[in-house]
Length: 157
Image (cartoon, rainbow, N blue to C red; front, side, top):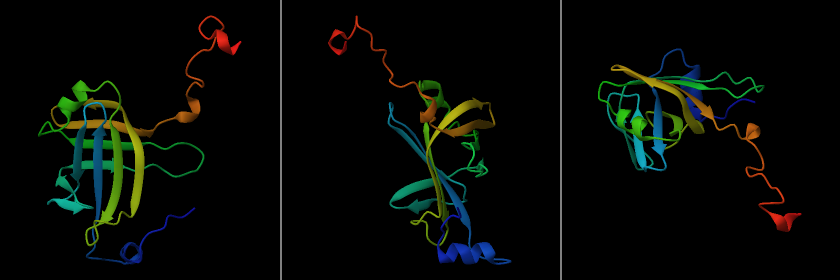
């Protein structure tokens, strides 16, 4: 199914050349520590819906939408400022990512959004943090989470 985009985005996508820029915004949160990082792939700060996204070098590779499998987003963030290394060292569960792409002329209206991504398979060195962003695979989780047996739950039997 095709994605719905604004008229301005459609014109920019179909034009042979345009002055419009598509800017990726990434919100990284870690619930237990309440850490929130907002970065944009731009040379200056972007304010979107009242939130300030600081410029930072990163690359993303969007998944192929085949409809047959859950795709993963490849993410690489420049690590020269050690922005996320402290958070990555402290976390015990994956950080959540919200990926949005906005037009530079209308940063308050995301054209493309992928929410609820979890950072998996993360590694870093002095120059870059790399990882794979995946959706939480709820279909393969054990249900019910607890084992109900007559010893622990006698009222059920």
